[in-house]
View 1 (tube, rainbow, N blue to C red):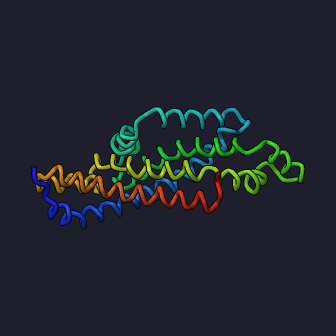
View 2 (view 1 turned 60 degrees about the vertical axis):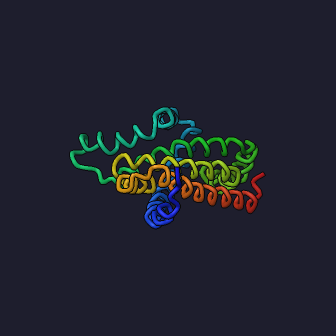
View 3 (view 1 turned 135 degrees about the horizontal axis):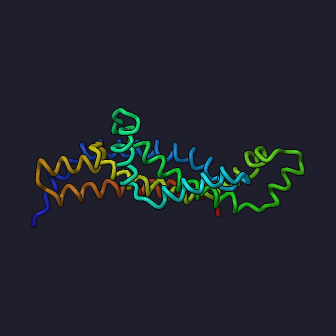
Amino acid sequence: MELNIDLMVNSLPLLIAGAGITVEITAMSVFLGLVIGCMVGIARLCNIKPIRYIANVYVDFIRGTPLLVQIFLVYFALPGIIGSRVDPFVAAISACSINSGAYIAEIFRAGIQSIDKGQMEAGRSLGMTWAQTMRYIIMPQAFKRIIPPLGNEFIAMLKDSSLVSVIGFEELTRRGQLIIARTYASFEIWMAVALVYLVMTFAVARFTGYLERRFDTK
């Protein structure tokens, strides 16, 4: 089989445009996931049992079900409850953010628990409240330690965001499918799609390594 390099090169502009949408979805999802994950991670360590129970149920449910099913729930099932159609972009960001939030919650929980308990006791002995100690002493130390797993989560979401193509959202994978439908060149296009994903994940991995060295997270 002869590889059609010209077709791969000519398809790159459309694929790169799709890659931009993929990065946008990933960045927004992980950012919102950080907000969700930070709150849920702290809630899982809370002494108030109902809050801790709700946080545990959320994490267990999201981590125990596929992202694809969660996308279907938001895009196809949710409209039946709210009575209106959900925009594909909103559905994609919502499902990916909720999914990412559960994994980031575990990252935050592990990061917080990795800090010596004496740090909290020292902060409280200085007259700081629990929230102040968490904000000014515990979280800055924990954040340095969770940079590597956060980088891994970004890479995982970058790849998993390809699942939003099932609801017709034209990110990188969907752009590849559309080009294949027109050219019938499955191998060349999927190889080009794979290479674009590889470049993006490699760049994120290198940036994460830089941050790890910059903040001396060892």
